[in-house]
Length: 466
Image (cartoon, rainbow, N blue to C red):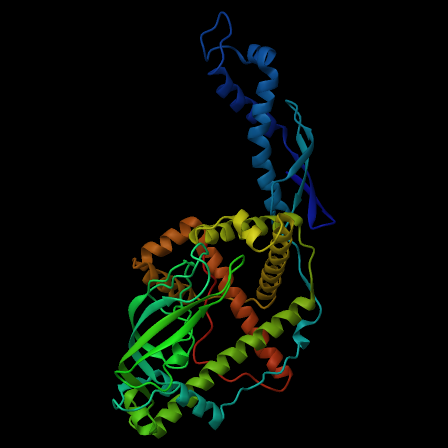
């Protein structure tokens, strides 16, 4: 086989291929054996007609089948010979297929583009080490206090103030405005819900643990009406439901009776807070909070630093991405998006309408995201190749074990399934990209004079396999 490869614009390659005449002859023999079993020629039993007659009556079919058999096989061999990585189907041209003569053809195909770098070793991105202040710790302690807050009964003769809580019975006692023919507003049983208007309001319910002074749409004005009341007291007040489109505001008379009163208790002593969260002392609690905050901020700082380095290495790279790669990724993104919409019981048409988007707008967004994702993967793959990044098998096994745990399945069975689906190679590629970027982020931090702090765990998370 003779193969001549020529690079074209747009990451396309033209292959000129020549094979021996034996390829043509063998393909014709195979085609004859298949066709002769399907046809009937007068004077011959099916499958027994000589090749010369088959060629005379079914010559076009014979050659078409022989070409369809030989061409793909020889193309695959030519691709291996040329050392290219096609990303779509080829376009064949100038096919010379004559019995007794060499097979010749041309094939033009889009290939995985080569990535050129501009001295990425010189990338310098300072790592900004985070800090944790005493104010940060105090803020976390205040948040703990809020989570530990509890409602405690108040003295019966104590007056309700904003921030207190009450359990009460509320009922409507009079329709306070508008004609009987006008639509009104009937609140539901749960605080905070909106309800449709009715001309007459019929409300008679117990409402529990209402915050005094807070506005509740179920009964407008109730929160303020509770201010100054005591347990056992009864009070009348007006509540006005706001107007809706095409409707007037409606005012009703209500009566509220306070059944129970509560005040919110927050633990003030740090030793009490520490005990509640299983710590020996307030000092240990503050130390634990500091360590957790620092761990979180270091992780975030590493992610931000990695993103900056990734942006820089992409800026220092150049590759001509074939449109077919972007189109394929955009289609995959669209299918994933439609699946998420379906899970949320929506469809694409409703989504576009609710977001005032056109199909062209969505397509442009998907293409932009697809181009960004493909470029990132190509650059990091090239970087991993340049740095000769190797991923240990035990690192791959850790990822597989994690997936197996999530699916509650045997790790060996999961790994076999991933191999059959080709997903294991995807996982390995993702791990190589992560490790390549880790190498570069570390180098970029050193170049900036701010070495990265040691990581407790290697970053080996991968994107979710589709």
